[in-house]
Amino acid sequence: MGALARAHPKLTLRFISIMASEYATSGEYIKHHLQNLTYGKLPAGYERTDHHGDVVEVLSAPTWTVAHNAQEAKDMGFMAFHVDSLGVSVVLGAVFTFFFWLAARRATAGVPAGLQNFVEWVVEFIESSVRGSFSHVNPLVAPLALTVFMWVFLMNLMDLIPVDWLPWVATLAGVPYLKIVPSTDPNVTFALALSVFILVLYYSVKMKGPGGFFAELAFQPFPKFLFPVNLLLEGVGLIAKPISLALRLFGNMYAGEMIFILIALMFGGGWVLGLFGGVLQWAWAVFHILIITLQAFIFMTLTIVYLDMAHSEHH
View 1: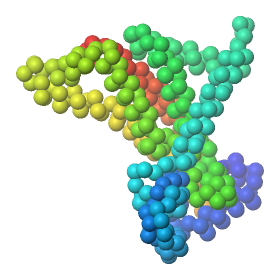
View 2 (view 1 turned 30 degrees about the vertical axis):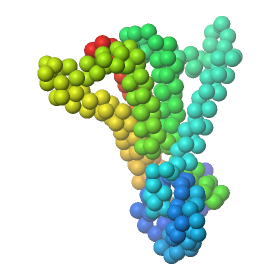
View 3 (view 1 turned 30 degrees about the horizontal axis):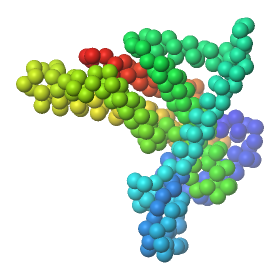
View 4 (view 1 turned 45 degrees about the vertical axis):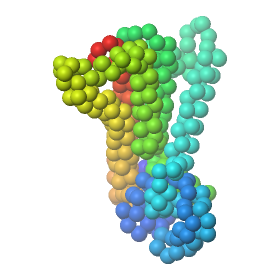
């Protein structure tokens, strides 16, 4: 945003004027940027209101529609879709797949360069991580680790795009909300963590058998006659794995996005605060690159470790 201010001052003033006219308070601005584009079902008789609270429409039948505010998104309940999180995640997954496929197709036996050099470096990095953390043989683990690392990294990387740019373009196109960082949506992080958890349960039962898996939960760390206590402790530890995996990624990325949003508020306070905000935004973006990469690495490493524990007799 600071670079935009220096290169296009009129456009920046336009951003600021839109913010000043559309949001009465900083709180409204923050809430708008934290709201997902939600598609769900509203019941018959539902009263839809504008941002002033005035009723503008009463639904005559149950209707699948896009939520116009946070209250509508809440009233849609569990069976609602965060279209922006789903869309961005799918696009980023397709980008990752395309570029790695392109590098594999154009690979040469000589000295790698450009895209091939980057892809080979990433693959070697993932291979060394898997060899260091996974002590068994499973052809699924390395591709899974590569997919998890690159997908989470790309989702986190979206946090470096200034918070107002794409939502402003979306507003011009009639889209009321747009969150472009999928990893700041707990639904996305829990979906990833639950996918890993399902694989952990599958391989735990496959490698140890149902009886062996149950014995692992019920007969340690205390003697067998204390199996209710063992089952409680080990069960809580098992369930905590996907929860901690999801919340760690979500919490760190959500906090990072919140700081970017707070810095963006400074651009509406005049040129002095705007200039200072530009410096802060640059500094935080540089530091945030470390967080983005580290969180992707931690998610991948824990995925490998959990799968290794699922293949082991004891943990």
